[in-house]
Length: 311
View 1 (tube, helix red, strand yellow):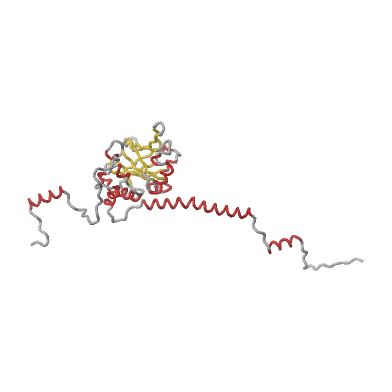
View 2 (cartoon, helix red, strand yellow):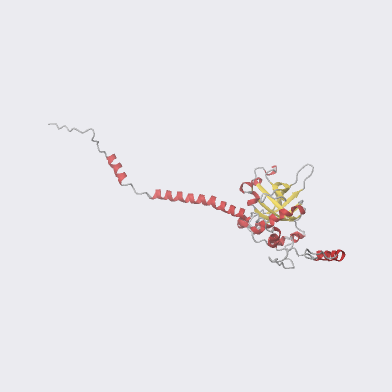
């Protein structure tokens, strides 16, 4: 006798696959060690990428802030003389420039030189020596990477040459590199020299802009993206900033000093007279001995001037 089992249409046949699927939903499997390791590596990569982009950006912003112009209305000339530890700007030597203690002091002097440029002959010509200043973020980074005075490099940057303009060419120049072992010099990284240009740092006049990009001799060399800026105390001593244009140019550049060897401006010996900083209550408009003599001479000739209270 044959038994016939009738299955309801609505009744679904349970298969091992459906049972397994239901059990997975109810009890999900624990993550394996490989998946946990992948998630951990992805997190490390995110933090590493953020650090690679975030730290240089923060350092660049800090450097730009330190190079910002002084507060409007402040006595920039007096602050610059105090930073350089000199009585007048005409007595600045290489010793005073190297005694600058911070990038903020460098910025104060650099901005002050812009207003004095119309009184200074800044037509540069011939060979000059350069020395990087370990000030600010990038100055300290360069000192850590290259060492003081480029001691870690076999072909360090030692100078700049300036060629005046002629009827056929504009003023231009290039950089000098001296091999530490043999003393052999090589020149590269040429630039055009633009005098009395607006500053890339504060927008003021009186800057000498070194344009590396317009000079065709650099080709595809990375130096073609550099922009330099100089402001001078005199024809033999200048302060400079150099940086890549896509990172801010001189506004975010490395500070250095440009000087001519064998001149008084290149003197690095300490002065014999010790600098005494002026006090806040000191009368800065006190007449000099020459002015006192002229006043006394006029009083003898024309008599003493009467004040408003005199009758």
